[in-house]
Length: 233
Image 1 (cartoon, helix red, strand yellow):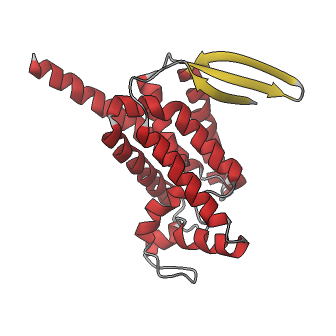
Image 2 (cartoon, one colour; image 1 turned 45 degrees about the horizontal axis):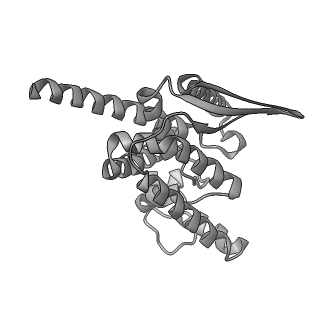
């Protein structure tokens, strides 16, 4: 199993937005679980994204009448368990600082939120009848990975490989690591469509949608900056 733990790609600015996103997600997680299992389930049903609710614009479960559109935003700050939270926030911390450095703090915040929204909508398109709540920052983090792949494909990422009692640390280009990751998401997404359910409870198309959103938007930003520089000179 491969576990990336840092990259050799220092940023020139402190990632304030990345850090605050991590803090907010962590606070929301512990706030949601400390009230017990029933309260946690109620929060997930009310504030998680349920595709069927969004399609029909009506609540399926007993809730405080949370507008389904609102859950497109709230769902990206909820996590199912501690491993889910740590996994998403770890990837955000490794790769988010450089994307924030490139875009600027405010633009990165908009990019991150829009990535979460885009991933939620794409998941809904592929699963319009699903009544399973979808939660997590995975879609927004996937957008960050897409951006990082285009901006820093040759950056070296330190990876821990472990299998039973074998442990090795080595580096690999970000393009290989992230490329393998998105390939895995696409394969599992296609498989989930063929069997008509989420494999392992994972919203694969939220990951895929967020990733390609990030890839496309950063490509657009790069072209815009090149065009601006040409006009300036």
